[in-house]
Length: 338
Ligand SMILES: Nc1ncnc2c1ncn2[C@@H]1O[C@H](COP(=O)(O)OP(=O)(O)OP(=O)(O)O)[C@@H](O)[C@H]1O
Ligand SMILES: [Mg+2]
Image 1 (cartoon, rainbow, N blue to C red):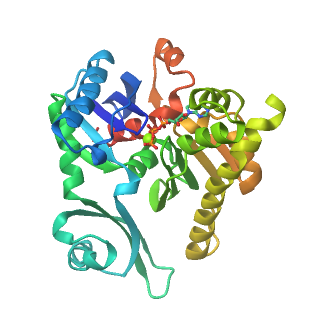
Image 2: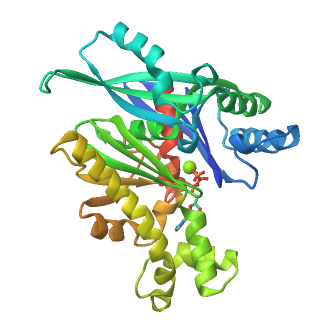
């Protein structure tokens, strides 16, 4: 059994999977909204208690059996870089990363946890090269997450980043795609090639900004704006397209960032382009979001299903209906631990 917990700024999600005979099976899942602060913002014991109580309650109510859990660090708090090395051995790369990490990350190496993955070895470049994904996170951040988990009566089995987990649950193994986690506070964008994270970026424009835009432009309360956003989204006909009009300028900011990610990858990889974009997160459910992005980006955009490779009981399918896009990170974490 393996468990993933995704602590977002708006919701906490939990997923438990079993892994037998090469197949994943959904054992339990749950999601809860929360008003508390996320671990990186938590400062005193009281705030730690609020958050860890929410995690503990969700773990209990979702009927999760294992107490060993994996968590993901928010993309805004970690540093992810792809670095090209000459053809070195794995051991040589490991030591080069250790010695050179300083120049790639903006925090002192002794205050960071630095990990790397070899993305691919290429003979067709001249000279031949090795692409390496470097991920660094502040130790203090990891300690905060560990504290939340421990105060919830659980134990920390693994730590990853949001996009590394998302790539595992949503990226196809034989294609280059754009992955977008469209959350509450931030939109995280990744390029994944053959299920490997190549490029990542995070912008602080997501669900909250959309709701604010609707509230300000239409002069309504936030709660009303939230409802308009969820019900009408980018539809041109509903409410005479007023909600769409309010959302559009903010939506463009996000679409432009996706375009930039595609261009950046294209320039670097000369020719290979993401063939489609896969959306996850609560904001992926906004009416007409995927179809509008298809038009703006000129590639196919779909809302991803992180349970595509997971056996799910028919009764649970019903329960998940509409919520699947929320679970991308939690599913990816649980898959990674198996
Ligand atoms: N049907 C919908 N249409 C538009 N927006 C929606 C819909 N359902 C949920 N949302 C938005 O999704 C956001 C929450 O998504 P999610 O749970 O993925 O965020 P989070 O993981 O807590 O945030 P973050 O990862 O940014 O910290 C909220 O801003 C909410 O308004
Ligand atoms: Mg999130």
